[in-house]
Image (cartoon, rainbow over all chains, first blue to last red):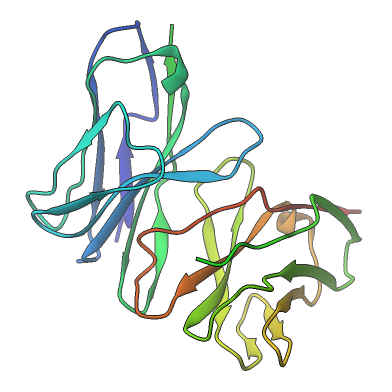
Length: 111
Length: 112
C-alpha cells in the first residue's frame, strides 16, 4: 500500500516553461488536494477535487490548472512557470470521515 | 472556517508531557478540531481530531474546553522524534479533509 505518491521529488524549471506535477493515491479516496508551502509558512490550498470530474479552486489557484479524470490521479499543471512559484508542493487524499494523507512533496525551483 | 491561534514555538524536555495550546474562539458548533504535524519538511501527518469530547489515541490526547474556544494537544511522553511543527485546524464536520486551512503552527523542539 503506497498511499500518496508524488513525482518528481525535485524539479528545476526555467521561467516560462510548463510542467505537470503528478499525484497518485491507491486508497480509493474521493477527495484529493494540492497545497504549496513557502519557507516558514504553513500550507496553502491551490486546488482540490471531491471526485472524478469535479475540481474547485483553493486559496492560491492562479497559474495552476488541474483535472481529475480518474479517482487515483490528480495532476497539477504549471502553464508558464514563474519564480514566484518556487515552493514545495504537497498532494493529499482523504475521504469523508477519513483524515488526509499527504505525499512527500515536490520541491520546485523556477529560475 | 474558524481561525486558530497557536504559539510560534515551544520547548519540552524528552520524556515529559508536551502540552500544545490552541485558541479557536470563533469555532462553530459543526466544526471539528484537527491536529496535524510536519516533521522536517515532510508531508503533514494526522494526529487526532475531536468535536467536543476529549479524545485519546496511540499518539496523543486532545482536550477541548467545555465552551470549545480552546484546546490542548498532549503528547504524554515526548521523544526526540516528536520534534516537528504542529498545526491546529478547524474543519466543518460535513466536509472531508480536502480543504484544510493551515496556519503557521507551533514549532515544538524536544530537548534531550
